[in-house]
View 1 (cartoon, rainbow, N blue to C red):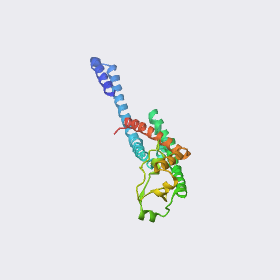
View 2: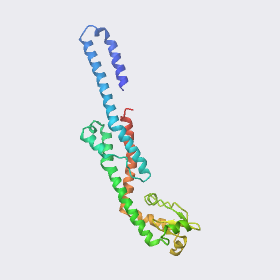
View 3: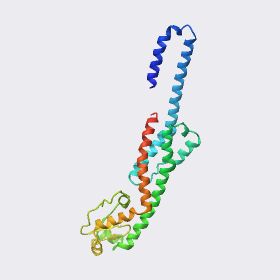
View 4: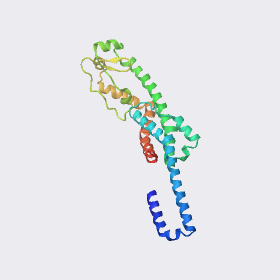
Length: 241
């Protein structure tokens, strides 16, 4: 757009050139042209400053946060103080409204809420899984389990927070034990309970689906995974690399 404007301006100047050398029109056009060039340089410097102080660090932070959230981890890269300072100093007011709105939503609401939900769910999964140890396990000594059996582990975070109960294992083989939290279930225990491993896991997922901490975490993770790419795209369009 800028190049077209300059081209059009030069075209006009060439047509007016016979008059430029002799009068006020030439002085005005020259002054206007110099002003436009100055404004262009000022906008470029402003973008460079915003890129260095806000666009680049914000993009790095939320890109790293996206990777962590995809792995159900905490988003340690987020520095909410940086955004608070940008707002208090007026730096954030220089952003386009769409970008300012996206970053404000992420830094002030979505990502802090996600972090809180992550911590609450981490405690809740530990609490619930320790209850499984007491209710279902038939081996409670890790040394015995590790020495005499093959320990089968479940990523409880990933399993319990998915949208559907996709069981990560297909039963237990001879010599296997399923790790709950700090204790273990043998195939004999499943047989005694008259339940398959898949049925047991599905029941754990169904119970989790009713848990407020799990539901809140799922919702906030979905929101973050949806909103972060939008903010990254806006930052890329605004930044001057």
